[in-house]
Every structure is written in C-alpha cells, then in structure tokens.
Length: 476
Image (cartoon, rainbow, N blue to C red):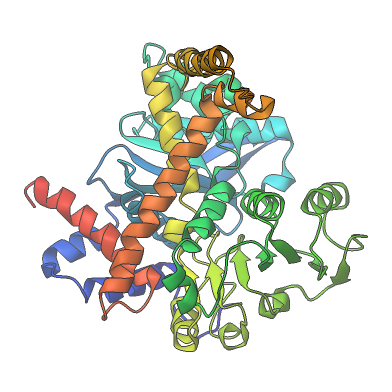
C-alpha cells in the first residue's frame, strides 16, 4: 500500500519527468508543453441492464498529439479515475517515443468491475462506451486508436471495432480504429503475448551488455537466474512462461491476489496457470509451497523481480527490504518515485516500465499497419524467399554430387532454411529489433553521461528529446 507521504501515480510520473528535464537543454515553455495532458474527456452514459438503467463513468485522455494518431489502451477497473488515466496517457507518449512508434500518447478507462456482469451485458456496455467515444473522434484510425489494457482483451476490442464500423460504414480503414483484436477480426499473430514477449526480449538485451549487468551486481547470462513474478495475468504469465521455457530461468515465486506460491527449483508456469483458472487463485497449488501473505514475497531473495500487475506495489514502505538486484517493470508504475530513490541508493537497477512493457504498443503498431495496408505480413514475399533458398540448397547438393564430396545437409537445417518467414516470425523479428534498439539508445545515455543516475532517467531523456524534436519541427 502507498504511504501517506507519497505522491499519487500522476505526481510520480511528473517527478520522474522533471528529474530528466533538469538534465536537458529545453526551454521551460516547451518542457511544460510536453509535460501537460492536452485533454481529457469524461463520459457518463446509461445502459438498461436487468430491468433498470445503470450509469457508467468512462474517460479518454489525450496527452500529446505531436504525432497522430494517438495510442493507448482502455482498462476496465472499479478504481479507474482521471488522474490515473492521465498518468498512463503520459507514459504512453514517452513509451511510443522511446520505441519509435509513430503515435502520440492516450489512455482510456471505464469505472466497472467486469466480473459482476454477464458477457452480453459487457458487450452492451462496451458498445455504448465505444459509441460515446467514436462520435467525438476519440476512436478513429487516423486520430485515436485504443488497445486492450487491464480488464479488457480481444473480445472487447472486437466489439469496439464492430461498433465503429457500424457508425462508419464507408470507412475502408475501419478495422484500424483499434488494435489487439482477434485474428478473425483483423488482428495480428503475436499480439496477445506481445507485452510478455517484450519483457523477455528486454531482459535478453540487458544481459547482452556486460557493463550494465555488472552495475546490477550480477554476472553471466540470463540463463539460470532466479525470478520472482508478481501477478500472473496476461503479461506476467507470458513473461514467466517464455523466460522459464526458452531462457532457462527458474521462476521461484509467483505472487497472486490470494497469496504466494514458491518452489526453489522453479514453478511449472503452465500447471500454475491452469490451477489458477480452475481454482481462482494459487492456494493449495501442488507444485509449490503456499503462504497467504503474498505481497511480502516481493522481498524474496532472487536475481530478477518482475512486478507485472499493479501500480505502486514497491513503495517507500518496502523498498528498503527489496533484495532483487534487478527489477524489470512489466506493469505500469509499479515502483513509486520515493521507492525509486531508495532502490537507486542501494544500487538496484530498474529496467523502467516505459521500455519494459512496450511490446504491446509495438505489436499494436504492426497490427495498425497491417489493417491500413489490407494484407497480412509475409503474404507477398514468403514463397519467393523459399524459392531462392531452395535454389541455393539444390546447387550445393549438385556440386557435392558432381565432385564426389559427400556433403549431406542435416534434414532439420534444410527444413528450417527453406522456410520463409510467416506473420508471427516477422512480428517477433520486428519486436526483437525494436526492444534491442530502444535499450541501446537509453543504455548509451546511461553509460556516457555521469549526471544520468539510472535507466529510467535515461529513458525519459531519450523519449522527451524525440517528442521535443517533433514539436520543434511543427514550429513550436
């Protein structure tokens, strides 16, 4: 829980912004223009449910229009408020700038507990919310493009896209009004797991920089590192799954709403996910040891801590007891500004949220491009790539036979070499490249400037510089 003397989430974002701006050569007027939220729309609408009219409150905030469309998710949660939505919109601006997706920052939210409603009721509510936003161009392929966030997913995005299409029957680009859609509604392969995959790629890139690894008091490769994950939702689950199955990490602790489960040898993430789906929590999971007081497990000894659920879970109240030398923020704002200062003083390295969880918006960008181009990635070139590869293989085999060399290509190599890249492979390649280049940009600032104390400040400097360059190009 937040301490009484700690700032709000929105204030935390401003504190971190101001810390970076103090190290930059920006005019006060331009810095203020970048910092403030351009506009926030509040909508109150009624839906007839269960024989009575129920009123809902929703928000759509546009932080920066230095590039359009603006981009950002829509979350469904009972505690959504204007300050939170504006803080998240600001983070989206900086996140898009850091990973070089051509969007401004936006965010939306609806004050609702989706668990209290049947599916057909949620569809009614979502469609009405989408209508209220779309008629004000707060959902539009060229102006404002939402995506899933906490409490929403492919299903809600499909409803929103369909509602927009019904309102704009002649818009050929209507499907591009929202991303994170199901595949059969204009989605893209790899979007569901994109944020978790981005966390994996971010850690891989971090461990390619020995000097950065050394700053965290670590050594060696990613393989074998012990990991604590807080929140096994979409992001936490995919990050944990990929790190354990593909990178040799041991997920020793998973923290959920009803407690914590531990296994020093590494938890079976697939089995744990299935158990949570069937039982509603981690209690009594047979593959580990359960304790009810879960949040204290953030303090478990490990090499990597991944807060992947809530804001402000690491705060001034517990930051001094965090033992992980490396924290990667898979959630938005899991470390408060006060905790950030404490952890920095201890030498803890934090891979910041605006970079670490940018996989979602990166693949959303690919989906948006796919919708505008009206063709899936790989369709034009895949078979051509395979034909060229086959020419090379056949020529090598011919030369071997003609000269009696006895060369024999392994069947597995041959099959993989002859396979052209499909949409999923291209999406993963694009995401990997994005996460690598973005990390390199902020790492260079961190390493080459003595006045930049951490990766978060470096990330803000890179992002703000790019936003400032866009505004200057507009004549501001």
